[in-house]
Length: 297
Image 1 (cartoon, helix red, strand yellow):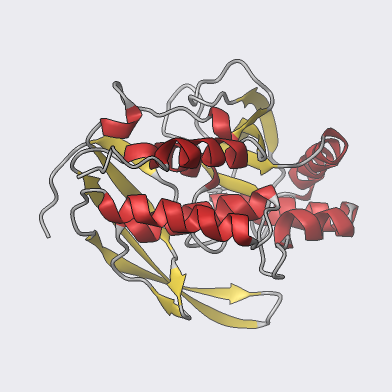
Image 2: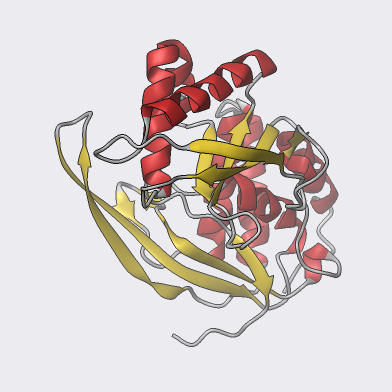
């Protein structure tokens, strides 16, 4: 149950909103034409990355590798499949975080170069037949730039108290003390979300950060959540940078929140956009917020 009498909740809400407002978002749906090629999202992401690296190595390092105050990789983009829609397919979503307009123009040039470089072993050219900006409620009209604090809760009713299901169809990699969390709980999800957003916002691991994390974890621990139901998903891929096969481990599954997410709902709304796992090829873990459903282990 939620401890509604806790006087710290208004302060927590204010601090979360301030943090989310520090992360600007540019989100686009790219409608593609990929003749003669069965194009996958990692394939398209890869050729865009190669084009950007050729065009501007410094910007490539900022966007792809990134870093936070502790030197950990923190990519400032998401490339993911767009929701299935016969009116737009094939398409992908391209999302940028805290990227200024000058650099964004260079990133668009990299897409133009990638189209010419082509896909697959035969380097078949492709093209972006149309691009549409995405709004904070995932519509294809409206704002070109907004903040994670604008991200909308997708279900009707008061977001704090709407019973819901948090589902991860794409593997999520949450690491604790060097080990994969195979059955993440709600507190694990909140911890990962807050850590990622704080990194994107450039918040140092200061006393303010620690207090905010402590308060968010406290609320998460008090929130009625059913145990994780899911399975482990593994991937072996070739790393061109390391010149060897790399094993990646993640999990798919869901957590049900019986009484809603309490005052942490803005973190979950933001996680729909910035995801909350580790990695960019595998394990980012897009959060889907769905109507409540009791899960059977």
